[in-house]
Length: 207
View 1 (cartoon, one colour):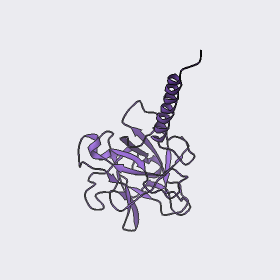
View 2 (tube, rainbow, N blue to C red):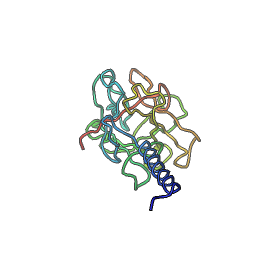
View 3 (cartoon, rainbow, N blue to C red):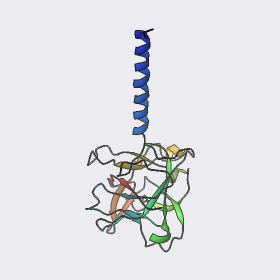
View 4 (cartoon, helix red, strand yellow):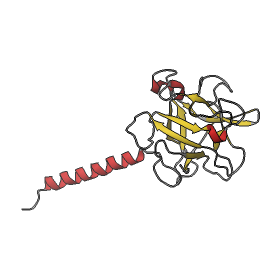
């Protein structure tokens, strides 16, 4: 018995729908420069699209709690960071999902023997009060970050992203998101909630 035209049409509809959902879900993930999904609680270097011209992101080593800065030296990896989605079941980092960002400061900053969530105490203030520092807590407004696709990527073949602080997503603070940007202060390029929005890529680090 030949399948009816209705059945064939229905099966094609289901197949196309499944493929569309799969593509949409795949598009929700954050990818590193090797094209692999960024895993939660795994170390990644964070840097600019063109690592040959600018340095990676790291912790400052001048005081504690440490600030987050961009290394002035070219081709430097910076320090490894980890991403912790607030949804415990998530194994990978997704677009626009609230997460905590941590950095192990034991090696990079001898004054801060700790692994800590990053935070911005007052994103609406002026530098240096709106810079990223350590000693934050997961699922708090000051440490409530998310990653979104960079709106106008430098290289369409390289997945790049914008880090944002979204206090309202964790239940408090301004009802808006703040783009994480770079701002030069006393000769150092700090990361904070004002300045030039930073286009970021991720490179897997050794665990």
